Length: 121
Image (cartoon, rainbow, N blue to C red; front, side, top):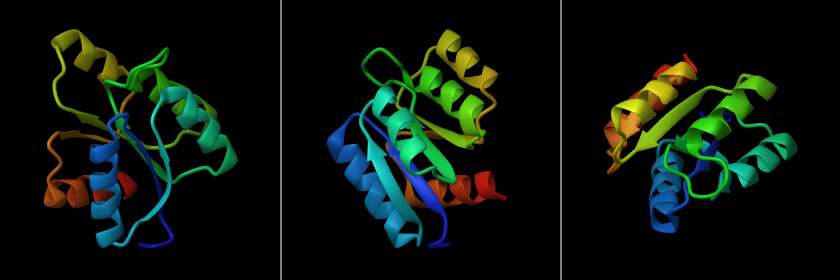
């Protein structure tokens, strides 16, 4: 698994650290962590990940859905959305991107392992 490069896009520092630690324990390589959509796009161009874990509710000009759409257009990178809460219209927008999966916060290690493995297969 350590040949799989994962990008974590999460604007809450503690949550991003937790996700990175779980992924590392599971044997994945966390190739980059981004705290905004703009940063995620820049980092994906510098070092393309194999999969992206993307918070839907990013702060800034680009939310997670807009960022995922751009990443998929540029490189067709599989995206797993992370969400703590999402209304019906947000989830409808997210489904249009055709994500590889969804994980509801707080992050559960078993669910994360299963969702990432499924997204990569």
